[in-house]
Structures are given as structure tokens and as C-alpha cells.
Image (cartoon, rainbow, N blue to C red; front, side, top):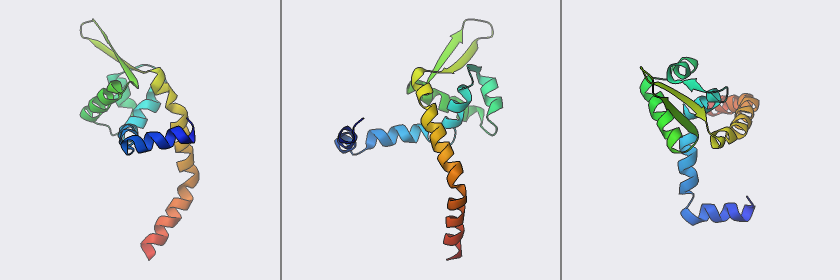
Length: 123
């Protein structure tokens, strides 16, 4: 996307669309779910086991939102009991490189951010 297209997109709706998408994918659990599913298709319980601290309700809500936004595909198998699997869609897979870049930036800048916070607290 060119800088011109980027500027027009932000000005077109005041950035609401971009904020809504970033709010969805940058919440506490969404990126953890997406990066966990980058390892491959998982069942709900396996996914919950691999993400420490996430409640069943929060995992359910976040998966629904990611599915609605086209980042995660949910497949239900007609078995007894029903088997449900989750996998990244191509759009979800395209989120991995920028997510890793953001995580790398955070890791690289932790010392600077912590020093800044300490200086702020001491004022």
C-alpha cells in the first residue's frame, strides 16, 4: 500500500476500521492463539492446554472473533462426541510475520522501556 493509499484509508473513516482490526488482533489472547495455531491444526482442549492462563470462556470468545474476522477456520466433524478443530486461514497465516516482527521489537526494546518506566516512577 502506498503512503497515499494509507493516508486516504485513515482519513476516509477517521481510522475506525484500522483501530477495530488492531483492537481485535492485539488483545491479550488473540496473538497467542494465532501464534499457537501457527504450529498446526489443534482441537479446543489442546489449544487451551498450550495457552496457560486462558479460561474456557475467553478462548471460546476469542476463537469466535478470530473466525468471524477470517483469521481462524473452525471445522466440526460429525462424530460422537463431535470433534472440532481450529486452524489458521491464509489471512491468519499472513499475520505471523508482522506479529513476530512486533514481538522482536518488544524484546529488543525491553531494557529501554523498563529504564524509561523506572525514570518516570522516580520523578
